[in-house]
Image 1 (cartoon, rainbow, N blue to C red):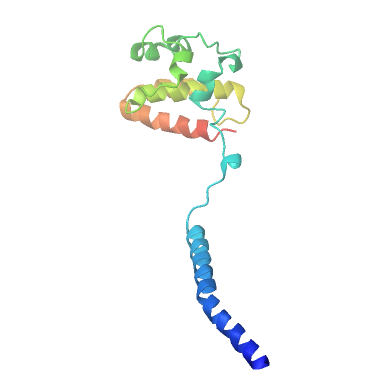
Image 2 (image 1 turned 45 degrees about the vertical axis):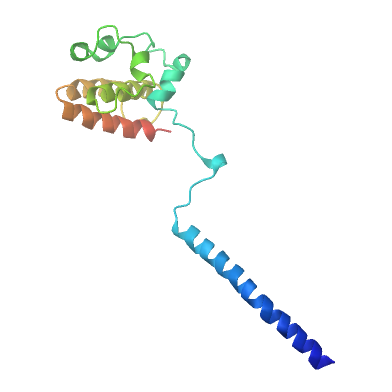
Length: 163
């Protein structure tokens, strides 16, 4: 009787072994593939759009520093060279607006990112640029499209990495 029981259980295990082996291989393959991929944070751990971006400032004009009213014009804030490049009555709020007109236009990208950079320089401790630096760099960048694109990228990096 003992031999028969051992034989029956042995036969059952032989029938189930391929199934368990298959499950183990599927699990192992899934873990291996997942380990090779970049792990992204879940919904609860993702960051919201930064507090220093043009999008942030365009939606929260009530949070603007008192030194820079949102009705200020670009030419009043950035000077006569900006007056030559942008329309006369363009406000900083319009410049920071969440539009896609800066795609492929270095001067529009410079204006959008520099507006956020100026606001950040007044509102955020530890921001890498002071207000006078932002204004000076904008005036210097308005000399060419290449300079404008370069400075827009620098402001973009500072705005996105701001805490």
